[in-house]
Length: 275
Image 1: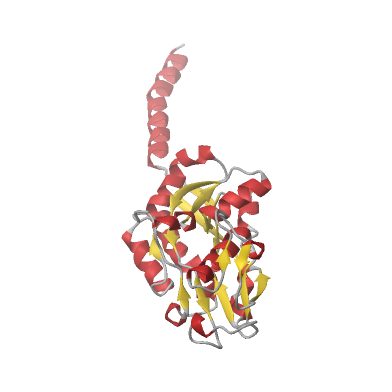
Image 2: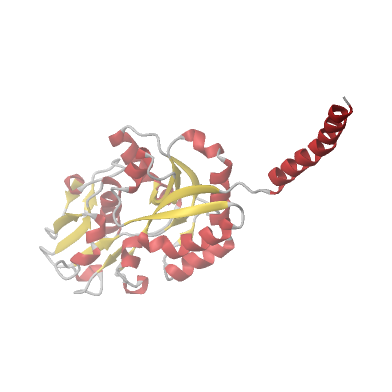
C-alpha cells in the first residue's frame, strides 16, 4: 500500500513538469505559413526582396514565374498558386467574364504606362501610309494600345467601347496595318514592324529603355482600370491574415524604390495614387 501511495505522489509531482514543458514548447514555436505567388519573371527582384522580409514574420513565399498573361489566373483558379501579381483591373474583368471566375484584387501594386517603340522611326509623326503596327492581342491590352495610338492622332475609335479592338477603328487615314500578337511577342516584333506598342513589364524584360519610347500613355483619373494588383481566388481571401501581411509588405517605400530601380523609372507605385 505504501508503494502505491509513493508512486501516486511521485506521478503527481512529475505531471506539472510535463504540462509546463509542453506549454512552453507551444508558446515558443512559430507557425510558418507557405504561400505560392505567381509573378511575371520581370518582377522577380521585387518579390525576392518581399520574400526575404516576410520570412522574418513566419511567412514563406514560393515564387512561381510565368512568361505570358494566359497562365497565372488559370493557375490561381486550379489551386496551383494562392496569389498572383501581374494584371490590371481591365484584364481581370475580361478574364472573370470569359472564364466565369471570381478572382479579386486584394491590394494595389503599381501602374505602368504603355509605350510605343520603334527601331525605324523617331516619332509617331513619322508613321507613313500603310505602315505596320503590332499590338497585344488580349482584349484589355489591345484596347489600351489602340487608345494610345488614338491619343496621338493616328486613328479614331468607336465611342463608348471600353476595350476596343481593331474592328472598332472608325477612321484610319494612313491605312495602317495591324498585327495582333501575344503581349510577350510585341517587343520581339520591332524589326518587322514600323511601331510596336508594348506593355511595361514586357518592355522591361526585353531591355527596352523607357526613354527611347516614341509615345507614352498619359496617366489620368481615367487610368484606374490599368492599376496592377495582388489577386486572390475569391472575395473571402481579402480577410486572410497572411495575405494581408503580404500586401502590407509590398506597399512600402522600400518596394517603391525597387520598382523605380527595376523598371528604370517607368512605373508608379499605385497604392497611394489618387485617381
